Image (cartoon, rainbow, N blue to C red; front, side, top):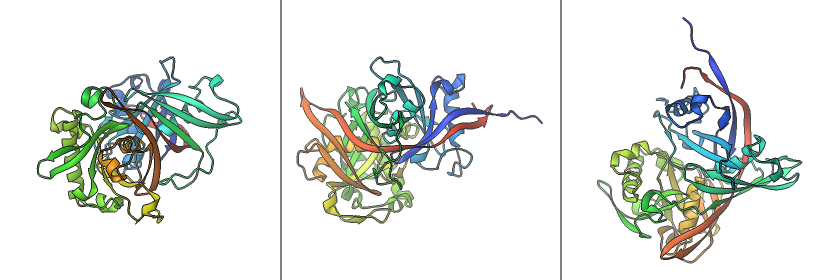
Length: 396
């Protein structure tokens, strides 16, 4: 019996921040997958190895976690004031769908590097030595990201001594500026706070009613006080991910939060929107031991944050959620700001399961609405492998 042969597609496997994923140039994809739709989704699912009822993604490039089940498609920008258009697809591990509803802040750190190496950036904008400023259009959410990519001898510099908690080895620092990170369309018609409140009473039937900050900056995020959920904010992955009841509770909170934020119209739509919103719980500083064994002292951080991604507690912190944390921390009266001491600030260092992270943001009020012009943080990125991925020719 004849079987359809595999095809090979140019691809690069990259780490960006505390995530990794498969990167493609749009024009390298098969023609049917160069446009949004079922063919593209089917192709990316097969590349990553989903859906996998065993939750291992053995037959694909995925790593069976939300941080490693990711795809990126890049193209020369269609906008005169940007260099590259960046589209992110979060691939479900056990279900047959790709979530296009948000950005990946961690992989954003690798976009500029890939774009330069792939020839998507005008060579005139890349110095022989120094820092290339890559203007990225984040197509999922319609926002601009400015990536500052180090260049040595005309090539992207990937090695260095910048250390990022949650990443084992040091690398070159890539500074990211998330411009005007508050959403303009979803959940409130442009308001950073979809409900108009800094703190809401979020009623979750069967679970309880919680004080919550519902914010749309970087990525839609639901912040709740750790103690209201029975936690301390010092938890590591095992404490949450090994508890099915806790995971079910967080998913219920996420669904009702999405409904309250106007991200979905009906509760059952949340299951098809796993990437957004995020759920995070915050607490005042406390001593704890990070997953690496590193001791984090209360004096090292301004607050503690734990966040869930794709139904599981994240091993560190999603980059987009870090933007939400930095933004909320800059606005007096949010749960994040209160956990950080309730003082005005333009930067915050928070503790997460793998260590600490600093993010800066400055907030102002314009005509009664909170506005953040940009959020800034440093990540790193590195090419892990480049060449071709192979998939069966009838996979899409």
